[in-house]
Length: 387
Image (cartoon, rainbow, N blue to C red):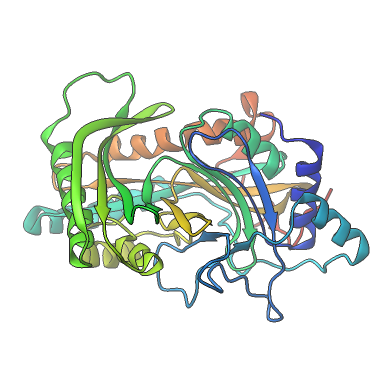
């Protein structure tokens, strides 16, 4: 997929000038929409500065930020380019940055070794994540075009705010979607992972995980007074992997922004009991998840389309041995239970990141670098891109 030149120019202008923007498409839609909005006088980009305006929003995994960052649908491509010519914006440094080195295998082993003994005593699940770090000469909009062309069944987005930095993703997991005319809320429970080629019956471990996530989400909806209906168990496919899935519908009146905070992070991306799992993630993971595993989406005409931020990358302009390009962290995780096998779990995170990694690195790794060659001595993160 190639975006038209107007969209590419607008995206690159926003990245260079530090203008918050989003380029997105809803599941099942081929048309991508671009919007941008200026931050307030203190450089903040509020998604929900009123109750009705159309906007894009992106949230952190910890769900403890003072506000949800996002972009109002104020400017299109032409308006961005006209504004840039009239009064270019001084580049702004993002508040957070990707890590130069990816997660070391030894670090993952240490985290796995720490949670397993406790899980064997108490039961439950902890979702351990890791990230792959890649330097690429490809621009984010180029990577997004290739990645988004692989499927139209996901929520696809590329965005920037000062609070979050640059993110792109193609997420298959619905957090919630509303139909205000019918007072209906739709969501799903998604757990268990295997390659699409694996046609064997799902094992008890995966079925149990799926049941727990379904129960958790359903209880959260019932607790706020909604009438809940759980659909039949099915498979949900995404590129080279597939998951177990139950579609869930609910009816009633509720504050949607508050409900998103109640649901996120779900046991599918954190674990259960949730509070204990989140605590152990903070103790044992050697990286911050930032927006990975949080939620991302849009509000259009009063209806919300919110998704768990999966199959995503966090990017920043950078130099590698004085070559201009982009540093990217690709995130993935897997649910660890007492019977989990460490090598299988590590390989699962590799499978989840492989499609995006191939695109980011380029064919035969001709456009990028990954691994031990990326060090603080070879990589310098920049405040704005170099063309």
